[in-house]
Length: 456
Image (cartoon, rainbow, N blue to C red):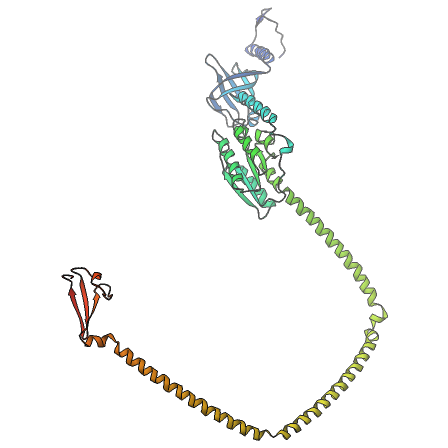
């Protein structure tokens, strides 16, 4: 459809013409869309409707007016946070007219939640402050340990961060030891928990390297990692820290202060074990070189051995060994001759000793020794009997003495012994008993029970 309209003022026509509804709507659409090609509008979300197609329709309003808005699926997918009913937002886009209904609406391209601008200003101011204080200085960055024995992780226990880290470590770093300090990574109390977790790891020396982080999100979601309390904890940490916050395009204060910034949690796990992986790679290459070198040496020495085996001397070992074998035979004969001579000498000496023994006649000497032994035996027996008699007499005396002092004999003479009834101890003094106390009296033919009535 081809037509021409000349506008005077807003939509006043210079020449009167009859327009169809479509023509008028198209003219309005061209005028509005060209005049409001790109703009930002602030308002509150209401009447939000989400379609199965992924498109979102809502009304943007303030206290005096409202305007329809549409957020198509492609633009919605690029947002880190989806608007919800009652949100205060700033939308960026253009005005569009929808001809089938004849109404105009906002085509939303970007969404900024209310307060984001203030957060960006706070983030910028804090970044300048900490940079001035030297928090980001490269010379203050600590090196990561080459082969960490214990890896500390500070993140949510239910998020994808810890799972990504565990997956990488399990696949690439067998035998690792990981300690998770679970914290909240979003909300008002998150920054304090993150800072305290860093302090705890340092206070108790629990790890060789720390990974702090969370998944992606809006600026508000990531804000705990932009708090000064977290920056101070990272700066004061004696343990090297890797920051893995948000997506690769997200940057936080924690990223700048940390010793190493990783674009993702998986990348952080890779960086932690990078040195070990490098060492393993070097060892594998060294192993290959050693095996190749040994194989080369074996081939060379094999050829040398084969060449030596072809030498006449080695080809016929008897030719090489015959002089030594003959010498061994000669030595064997010499040894046999020397052994026979030594045996003959010992035989002669033994015969001489036998003759000397016969000349000594030891039978007479044995009789004299036997008599002397019997004399000594009788003397020893008499002395022993005398000693036993003396001991027996002494024992009799001691038995008589013991019998004379036996308390039972004294009891037969009219004496008695007092005992405490309770503990069976002997009473030696009247001070040892109390009035009305029960006593046990031992006499010669039994015992009596008495009660103390009076002490005098």
